[in-house]
Image 1 (tube, rainbow, N blue to C red):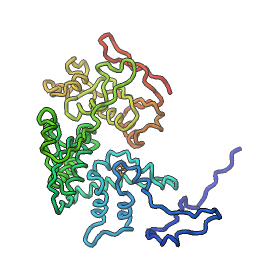
Image 2: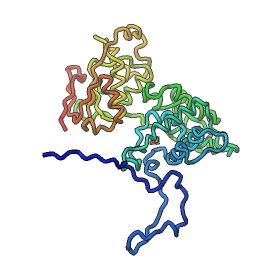
Image 3: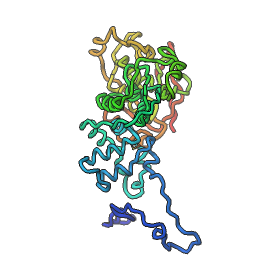
Image 4: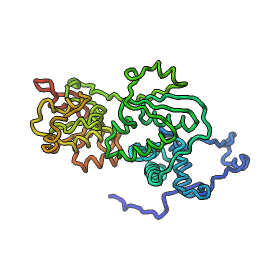
Length: 390
Ligand code: SF4
């Protein structure tokens, strides 16, 4: 026999301190007679778990205190601007991060032990948008050091480095082999996740500090590293994680088995305009959701010519389907996309809302499946995936 559920009217919150209790008492007053151990309790200042979990090291507690009205902005400055300035001390790309960061800060949030985490990522997103809307700029350094630094790679690492160095008064030049800065934020993440006007605005704000961008410049081809070493006082290498992980099972080297990075790069370059009729994405993290969603949205065309196959566009690195663009776009039909994950669906690494979006787009998700073999046809192309249930 089951007992009736009990209800409680007691709020599920407990707070030792009230808002505004942010002043430390003298140490002597902080120490109290808590038990009869021979040791005194000691109080230490340490990094808050949210900040400790943030790869950018943002002062999350600091800007949330401003957002909550505990710390007041200087006279004449809106709280949104004050909070944004505190946030961007560490990270100059809040609007992008507010959209794509999987928010490990929220997993580290102490409020998880009470009811649920603070929506840090959403606050960051809001502040980033507010700053773009109000055309906020970074303050230029008062003095120049006279030092020149070369930053190789214009992705998030290179841009963040350029930002921090330029604020310290160094003269920074970013070298990038592509036509536009942004790295994986532009050539890896699809535009519906990081709208290009948002990305451009946050990059331009960094360039406005006086940072020079030399795009379409590949080190070793257009300029040598020796030359850079001669011309600059220091060099930062921010080459990024460009290579994907190949599928480590038998048949994983079939021509139409491609890595997520190669796939997304071909899509963001505009080289790949359609996929096959049935697509299997193996993963379970946010990147695999991006791949599955892009594949689903691209669709397939019946009886594609061999030279129009997606793997040809991915491998080409060049013009892609230029000759057949119009015909291809008019013939596109939906693609059946299945995403497999070793973990059960509720334990996948992708954010919960990303999984929900993928399901809403019609992507089939099969959790608890590990790839075992890629089945190939006589020509060596993959036609099926054999999996084992985990
Ligand atoms: S969501 Fe923002 S604050 Fe949280 S971990 Fe990511 S970058 Fe850091």
